[in-house]
Image (cartoon, rainbow, N blue to C red; front, side, top):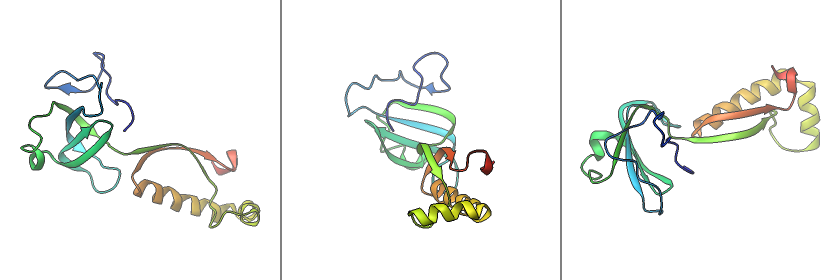
Length: 143
């Protein structure tokens, strides 16, 4: 997690039980509980909690499982939380190996390349990425 995903202005969806600390050192820590936590990998679950230390999510669990251990930290609550990675730029072209012949071959069988791209998207999402910005190799042909 880089920077704070939470707005410090009045428009935030965050409901703090204490004031949001400014992150002046790497040791700043806090908890965010959620009615529904949707991890990047695994099934969504209710009454979830993440523990953030500095710029790292160090724990993801049910809130009641970690409440005692982290009771000293500031707590915030949201309805839904999705910790995960963002890939802001990726080209999907459905290759099994990266070489010139494979790239040229992918243009000749776009249906097969499209099926491989769908499989690639599944693998990326299952690896924990929750947002993708996809730049298709084939431009409008892929739409």
